[in-house]
Image (cartoon, rainbow, N blue to C red):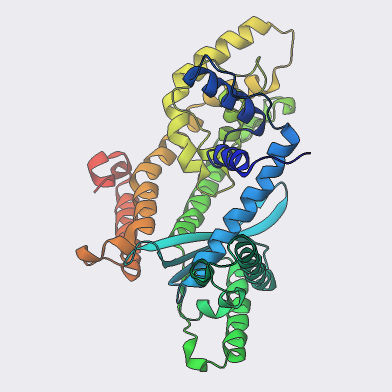
Length: 405
């Protein structure tokens, strides 16, 4: 693989940090040099793709070391939050810790760590961070053996302890797995505090549910009820459609099918559309339960373009292919019930989903307006009053002034 100067490694890591694909880093660097200094051949040889990909491991190590460095220097973790997710069928947790910014006094900073879905894995994550700090001190000792000031700025590995979570305000989603994980983690924190000889009263039980996740549960239930209602309404019509086209009343499946046909990630030239005005890529970026409302406005605003494209595509095929995906979408998007479903979900996205999402992310900054986390419960009162009024007068759901009030 060969060795390269540290400047070259840093240059590659800067590209990786800006999400440049590994195969593009060396060609981009060469093109930049040729444009800036056209009359000189500065780049005689370049690193191979294997070395560039190896630098990704170095970048991960540096990222985790910096995170461990900042958490270890802070006196305590102010707020802790984790969210379960998966990548390539592997489940893990994103653990976000809010600490005081050591570089900007009076400011806070969010640090993200990855761990598996068990409390013991969180402990192992902190232990690994301590090992990174120990190794960092060894490297700096070797590089600057006579400079004690630099070494004094690097915390020792034992400074990264679960005991820093003792007084943290903890938030997570409300599923039973997440609740159990937090309880197991709190037991480990109590044990860590006891091992350090600190009083048991150091551990504060301050835990709350994440309003962002609670809203996801609402929209998942709403979407299920809407789909069930429409399925019952068009039950006889669905029986007339050949099963090969896989037509089913499911807004999430519809949005993903549209993304497959017309999204930015459509990797089949025959299926992909040339121009997308309102892409659904943002909504399909994960497996969140509010996908149904987030993708609905895109579908509704693109409807006329979908009609035109599907009509042309199916006419061009002229029976030469089953065109299962195109036919499925052509059937469903021409259904007034399906269009009404996406309209209802779009209204909920603008009037409920976006405001709740904004408040959930900003309530800690709204203290000057006398609004904090515990005031989020007032949202439920507003929603209950609004939906009770809609039950009495369903036309209010289409009243923009009422829904946006």
